[in-house]
Image 1: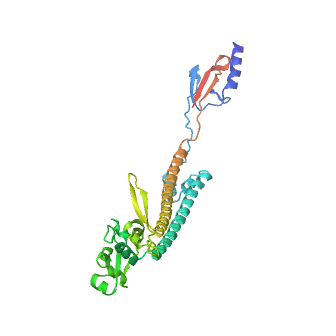
Image 2: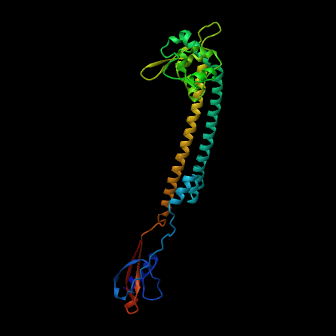
Image 3: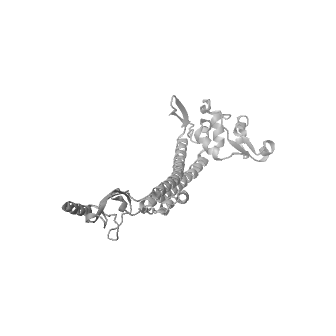
Length: 311
């Protein structure tokens, strides 16, 4: 029996981290324990509460920072540098690209408006529409579905006012041979002359020097049918320029959308990172301890066996 107790004591010493005991020669185990054998010899258990991580970061602040400047919320959360740089880089690249694309679209717009001013003429439009075969098309006539704004001056302004619609020229074609009428070259004007067949006669290259026809038909696929569009070399060039300008404007809009999404995603990521950070970081492990209880009144000094479970 003595040898058995010695072997058990050595095994307990090697396998257990701590022991419950009745005097200062043993270190107490701070855990939930279960005792067997002589439980009357055990002291009252003292309950200990492990300290938790008291640092709590509320998500409102990093979310607000990221909504204002993407990457700022990640910086506040002490996220990795690559994450901060990612959101900040997307923000800078989107803003820079958007401004560049918008400037490019504006430059092309100024160019195609100058081109239109040099190659589309009100007098040419009235003459070609009323007096040439191009006027035989259903969509090509003065009083059509779309209008241009005419600016009157002199005696015409006194009689009809400062502004009239272009369909007034249906019965007053002679106005264009005076210096008292001009077309208002606003945004609608630059759109109409490139978009609608009604104004194709105003392009100065509809006919050549010998009155030979230079305008031509273009087939456009509109899904379930084919649309015939009347064009000229200058009009095609003009339409292509407008298309390039609109393409850059669309790209600038995409850049603005990227900026907005970047703000939102950065804010959401900042909130998510904060919640992860606020979670308990300690990795809890289950530990078991087995040992002998010392009792000076017991035979061989052993009062029982202590089994502890720590989680």
